[in-house]
Length: 163
Ligand code: ADP
Image (tube, protein in one colour):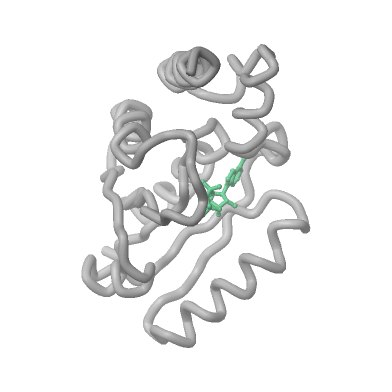
């Protein structure tokens, strides 16, 4: 059975990510959702926090393993014996970056294929960045992230405001 990896920042996980996970599982049966530990992006949540939110969300979805990696994605995929990378495609604006990354990954490791999945239209405008922006301005994110994530986001924002 082909193992698929869904890598990303997941800062935090949204219903858009979860939609992609469910679609991937319909094809692959086994999916590793892997948090990329990249210092460059100055995330709102620590890796541990992001893993915790993902694990909570994945509890409801059989077939998902949650992990993190701090190497090149293709090296991680090799180590895990994965043949497929899953990425989500929302709008055309995702395309150029994703195209470049998929071809670069294939250049480094020819055994890996990247498969793009489109979320349900209702999530096709949704990003983790947007969640943080809406929450920072006190907006409603109930329909966009799981309840536990919503709580963590508001807690984090309150903490940040107190500092
Ligand atoms: P990265 O920093 O790797 O882009 P993200 O957590 O932002 O990490 O996204 C991980 C993957 O999930 C990317 O392929 C991204 O396009 C996809 N993604 C993010 N939000 C959505 C969404 N609302 N619908 C579908 N795919 C999404």
